[in-house]
Amino acid sequence: MQQTLRVLATMLLAGAVVTAWAQDVKPDRAIKYRQGILQAQGWNAGIMNAMVKGEKPYNKEEFLLRATYLDELSHMAWEGFIPGSDQGAPTKAKPEIWTEPAKFKQYQLDLQAAASKLVVAARSGDMNVIKPAFNDLGKACGNCHDDFKNK
Image (cartoon, rainbow, N blue to C red):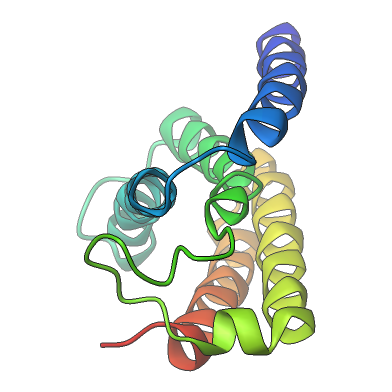
């Protein structure tokens, strides 16, 4: 719990600093930042997916750790979608991110809610609780990818 509180405090402080800094960020740096966060999300989701599918032995502590990381990461990538970051480095981001900001924001909130629910499910250690929560997370990811990411 203390580790989570320290991480959250660090994220809040970093968020304030990054928000001020983001005003002067070049698009290529914003693209690389968000891609790194999204790759880290995929890394953690992939490990959990392997456990859910039975391809990797289920380990409650590791699953909870990955779910917690994903929950924290689910709040971070969005600041990298600054105006002008639809170009400047290779990106699969669709223009709709900037032309449909309300929908994009809703997908962010959906992912964050699903990630938070997955942490709660992971704490139970019950795969019958975890699987539906993990599937909801997958749907949240997929919805955003379908509408806002070029293949």
